[in-house]
Amino acid sequence: DEGKYACKATNASGEAISVADLRIYSNQQQQQQQQQQQQQHGKYEG
Image (cartoon, rainbow, N blue to C red; front, side):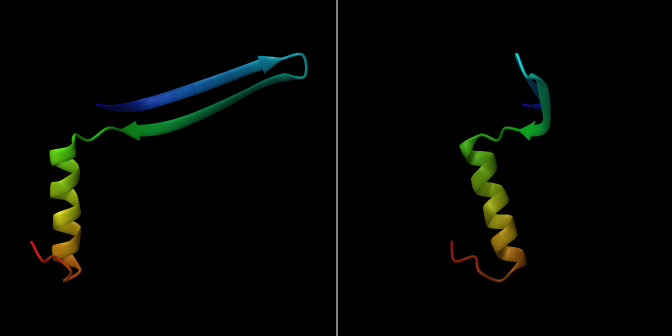
């Protein structure tokens, strides 16, 4: 899953909005990405 997420907070002093790009990886995807990064940097031992 991925997308832009916004958080809006409002109180008597005013309001604030924060926006972030978020990408969710499954454990398998995360492990594969870490292995690829380690291979590129010569640190993969798996």
